[in-house]
Length: 245
Image 1: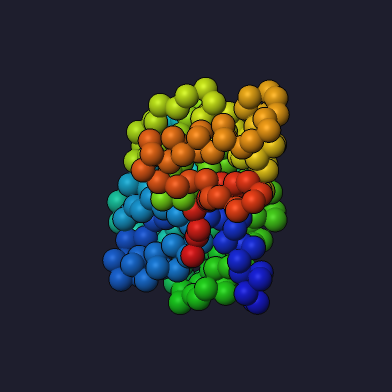
Image 2: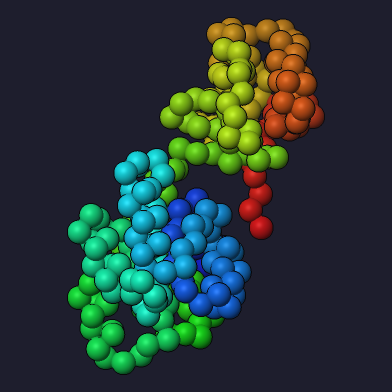
């Protein structure tokens, strides 16, 4: 898989919420290193019972529900097949991917009957995970449940449903014009906005100077103690998004 294809998959998975279940600590830690390339939001469970409890706890609320489950099969307390079967009673659509050392036909057929979207034999590598995730994304038209959450520079978060800015999970009180400034840039998806465009959108008229816009951005910078809006000399501003590596 070439680098462009890998980056496209990462772009599709970064904001998805993953529930990962694996009882073997060594395998879990090694796999997590690979999964963290693709996902920012991973909840880990160490057996099928804990995995089921995590799923049920979060599935009650749409805003915290998972987008994808990756699980082992043979685990203590509750095995992967039993866990999947129970999950399917609540949710028949959530994609489920199995990472397992079991290659015998019995386990494979049981997992298929339980309703899974992919099966990877251990040991696996980045390319195998990438290909499976790509297939799941294409098959399920997978989109993050929290796509209204916009990750900005310096770990600021904009919630486009609530029209609220957050830092460390705490809402930041914005003025009416500051809120309008964020709304303008969020809906333009990162494009440069000229002084005139900003001036007209926020103040509903044009000014001979860009002083009002500069003052607004300057006050916001001081309030946040962070420069979220990058000045493009002689042109306008761009909103700074979080860079995922």
